[in-house]
Image: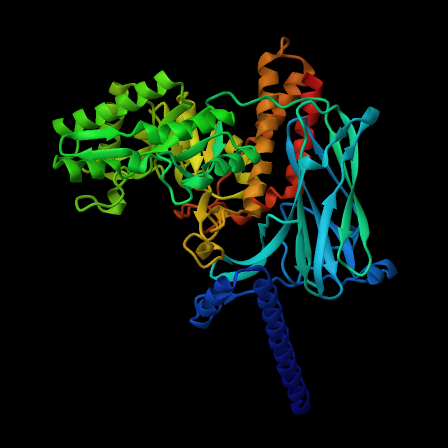
Length: 597
């Protein structure tokens, strides 16, 4: 018996040592690929964070084995296809059925879609480069190679709960990247199908160079026989805290490039602040319209019909610089005059339609700490001023509940009652705001969502499920200092704008683009149902039932986290909407569209 126990203890001890060795090897591998992909300053930052115990590194267990073919050995790598909604880690070995040299995607004319090519290196390779030729289609028609953008994926550290994982995060502005032994590499291939593309099957060759033997993969794009509807003006999707409408931001020289960047990913609204364009003094506020005009003209140039101007914190400045009290006669007169001049100038100069958003009306000030920043009193007064000036405002509320009123703390109110009565409302799309969202839609008002989860499901199907007409989410961040996951809200950034003006997109941002595509299919089917002459036809009724079916949601999580750092939906809900299931949903939507079109 004693002998048996000793053997068991030795086995347990050996297993523990093996696990420690495996973890040490994985950590070494993760840091090696991270160092190869990130700027030296970022690598140093992560090392410091790990040393002081702020990063608890974790690794995804890999159970797959890779068996190289003779061709794989000859060229030094295997080729595989991958889903743009799946994460990739340094120790990932794709499933055997994914190893093939053929990629495909389906698109409507005017739609952008992503296909993902993977390389599994058998040894260190100094550089792997992927290039695309023209897509050749029916009757000799083609889609030029210039409509295909290829971005190599770089690894970075990202938090999940208290742990940090090294995983694919950035789609780099290059189609060439270093490959390390047995560390999978992804290449995101963005295909922009022209609006006038003929339906049919288009194919092109993807050349892969840099290994011991050059290789070729094939990309197939199936173009559908219908176009998606353009959103009406009340629908919008875009970035949060994206741009300074005064044109005075640090990267002001790249203003046009920023607008092009957001347009490229299918978004249709710009969000930002006026900042230095508003000059406040003791007698009132003046707006330097020359600073704003440049931005508005650029928006018109690239076809943007709407923008959201955020005035969070602006009431503070009026009180501080004018020496008045919140919403007294002096404040109201100056604030309303500012709103009226903004509205009149916009109409006179033909600006894109704009709405004013308030997240925390005052943010932080001496009278009103952050927990009370979203007060009923602030919103009521601001909406009154906006109504008198004739300029729409979008107030935001964090949830259903409420609390003491700022002007009389003996009284209390609830956010859902106040918020759902407004023509426009913004909130987080999770159970904490469930009643606010439902009552807003029930009252016939327009719901928008912001800062609540990421990616394809959140930007697409979730938006439909809560009855919203669009959303704002990600932030753009300037400078290499943020080019790693150790900054505030590491999952919140859509794009890093480096010092040289280079734009680097996160994979989650690209997945969000796919989500907007999903929503466009839903929107198109809704419009076809509305226009159908026979509302009782079997096809119309079946399409209506399908929209109702996918529109059902059952929130399970009561977390009050606003979604930038944690999942605000229960894990079983997130698992229900995998990329593969969303692909199936889109195919079904397309089928109904073809029947009703």
